[in-house]
Length: 200
Image (cartoon, helix red, strand yellow):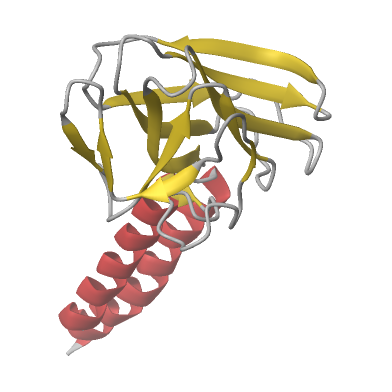
């Protein structure tokens, strides 16, 4: 009986842990697919966004992906967008970013119906270093009507914005009825066995 109870407790704890924080699925969020447009689309000017293993800055420094083998490389004046995601208020969009040269001014943007920019935030930080950016959604998203993305501004051909490990983090608190149900299940299994043991 002790083994059965222990197993049940382990399963219950695992369920509680799994439902507290879970990673949302963003198609090709690590850019490991052979095609950059697998889950993404881009506006390329003067050259397209690419999934690359290695980037060389103007001063000759080499940069590699922070996660996996590939990362997205945005030349200046290029935008990389994603509208294949539905989020809820309180969800967090998290990603890694790096600017290779001082020439690049990078932004993270939110689009509403593909036209109006509802949110646009500058990505600022030390050049040549990977940073983590987290954005918390304050309202539910509408499928295929809202999008997020990145854009790098600057002199064409001089500098790139690197993006990697894009993921959605959703926080779902375990409801009280579920917690109570788990406790009652433990008691229902444990109490009859204890009573039986006492009678022997």
